[in-house]
Length: 388
Image (cartoon, rainbow, N blue to C red; front, side, top):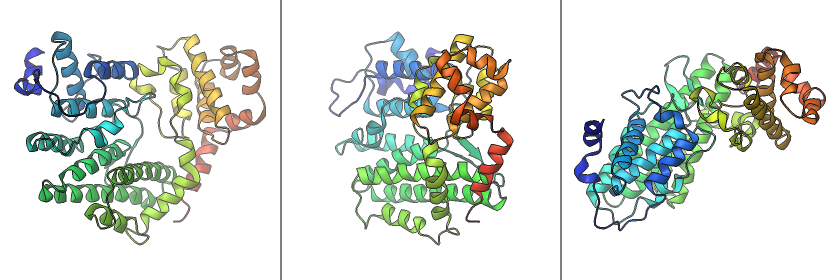
């Protein structure tokens, strides 16, 4: 393992520096502990890292190195690498690491040596090829091209826009290359959305719509963070893509579908941060809402979850539904748990306080959970076919 660490991290650049003049956020060891808290499975020997999972290798290698040499200080490029890897590994978990502003702005100091800046940009360009499907369930696969589309592609937008912003005045040619890559990626994502529309897959269209809308939001947010003006190359290119006639109006259609149906169902899921048992298996990561029936069944049938833990999850879902009563996702998760657990609703009610059990069995919540998965998904499939 030590030889792999040396090879991966270019030890001559990793060792302690006499000066750290550029701003940093959380200390590396603390950041790694945050990752272990929310996504401990990425450090399990059984959790394999393939060729397009270098962010996992970065986390493991730096963790091993700091265990062996705790006084080591990462150079700026490797600190950026660690922050990006931590973000990639946890952004789809219940408690993502809080390094957004670091990788989108603060670490791109205007006085960075060009060598360091280029090393950071190299990582950004590489990150577009990383496979995030092991650390997220919020992705879809095109029924035509088989291309993947995930929320991680929005996270890539956010660091790519920052890299572009840092390069504009210092290396215009590379900035132009990166601007084109960002716009090409946005067009690729719109193509995946249109491919779901082509085969008349309503639920697939809804899922793709909310992913692209979220990703475009990341792109715009970081352009605003960097104060790009209206004449900026990337800003103008984005506005052309956003126009109503681009790619058969894909952007306006997906924006409508997301705003009308999906945005309220895909929030930060604060309620599910409480049951920590959900953090230990990637299979328990929450998918795109409100399609949580299968997830609820999987939770209920998971052999590694105790009755006490199932009760914790049920209570969290109930509390989340009460807090967000106009949503249906948590109700669908409860419907799935009812279907998946032996004994059904009766058994589920035994796992929670009696007052909560009563509300699970009657009223508005019961109306939502008693609707069959087939009927619910057929209805939402029709929602996704609007504006065809």
